[in-house]
Length: 255
Image 1 (tube, rainbow, N blue to C red):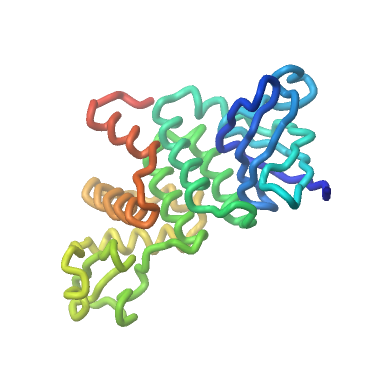
Image 2: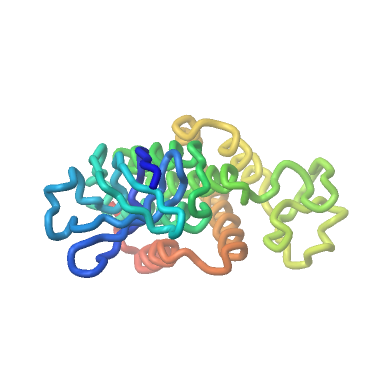
């Protein structure tokens, strides 16, 4: 069994038998992997991390060829991100980030750009008060990096440049020009400011785009477009997004 050492973000973990854990990681060099940590619940001192959700670790694992469950022999904590778990708003947005990593990234398909983006988003989430903006911008960036992004550069049907008012088609996955809007009668109008915001976010560094101001109308439309697209192409609504909507509807104060 080959031995690998890599950085990893903990997506979720489960008890396994009486003494062990199964942990889902997103790693820098191997993408999303599943790891088995034998005996960690009985002798936690053997590991330098308790593998809390969101935490950034350096792990050593033995990659098995016969199964997707690999044996993790060491885990050293780099950042626990305690501040994320200590706030409802940060926890909700952080959960959206982790769930998107699990939903959009195939197992053992390495993408260091997605790893770096995720780590930067978690760091910002711990210190930045606009947690919803971080989650929204992360959705746009990870869709672009994972190859799932909606088509906003031109008409998704004829590839012509968009001149004038466009409509967004969830079914076709992008914008429709005036001549092609009949191809999806369920497509809806979209503000030019929303299109410009998405293109700007896709093409700039994560830290820089956090300074981008969004008026309430564009932010509402961004959320609608992104969530509709994700729900349609994933075939389900993210659990963390349902929690976020419930908190908004109940006027729960998120700090």
